[in-house]
Image (tube, rainbow, N blue to C red; front, side, top):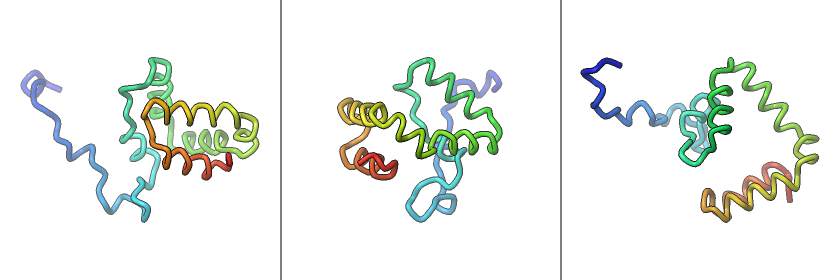
Length: 110
C-alpha cells in the first residue's frame, strides 16, 4: 500500500461473497470464503493469533484439522464445554437462540 492510497477507504466489493459462490443454503462453499466473513472484533489476542495461523495453513491442512476437530468422539468428549460456550455466546448476544439450537442439533448435542 502506497502513501497515496493510505487514506482511501477500501471498497466493500472485495469483502462481499457473490451469489454464485454460495451454496444453496446461502453459506460460503469453501473455507477461505467463510474465513473472510469472520468478525474478529470480539476475539482475544490468542484467538486472533490462532485464526491467523489457521488462515496461513494450506487448504488441505485446514480441512484435515477441521475433520479432526469435528470428530464425533471429540465432540462427545467435550460436550459440556461446548454447550457452555454456546450458551455463553447467546448470553453475550453474539448469536440468537435459534442459531444456538441449530449449532447444538448439527453437532448432536441435544
